[in-house]
Image 1: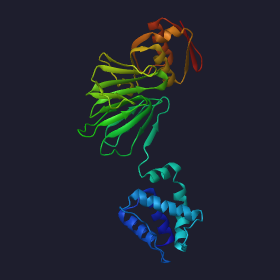
Image 2: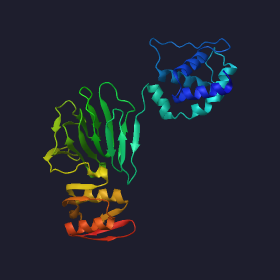
Image 3: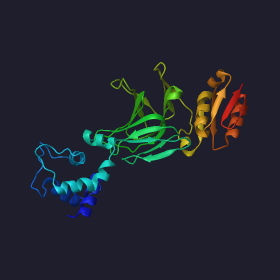
Image 4: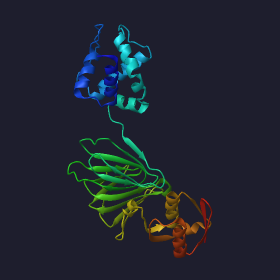
Length: 321
């Protein structure tokens, strides 16, 4: 095996793209080298691929740092491998190293920028739409017991593939939502002070984060659950037939929503700052569906409906009651 072949093979191995035959060749070279040294690896169970990669990475890093274990000699071939794949090894981040050490995959973290809606296909072919400002974490593969994801911040609409013995769990900072297969919406923006769950089809079970052993609160279509983060009170209320997932189509749908939250959504969507002189106005509620109108048009509609005046500057709006 010449230098170029060794370089390409080692890089593919560390990146996880090597074929089974390529892995066998590199492991054969790794375990027994030209100087007769054989690495001793004491394991009671066969090593996983991640464990093998970790073992190789540790040895490579030792060689790069000129730290050869006592009693072992570093052959010219090992030095060659070190320099050949050093670029690939150095590309492995601290997160990846921790991943291997922990012997599990690092979950994917998605942070949605302002003015964007992102659609993700999950490992089980379920779909999730993430609204602007959302932070969402999910694994590359689901385990055999359940399918768990985490909505750290923001709003997400889920369409979940049904699995009888494989429940789907959405974790937020305050509650967990468990389903087998259904479509539902979770809204958990920290600034709003509430977490809301709406069901479109099927049924979901909801438990508080610190009370998972208590019976779940069941939610069905045309019902909304609201959890106040201030007093941890849960309210389950009936809702009208509304398009819960309309925002996925770039529509803004508000059903008896207070103006404070409406303004907050508009700030995110239009990248502006809305100031309100009369704070009582923020508690007034409104039901309205908005499309992709210009911000000035949206403010005209709201001001006519709720009887207020406003002034617009370049990147800010002042609302006057």
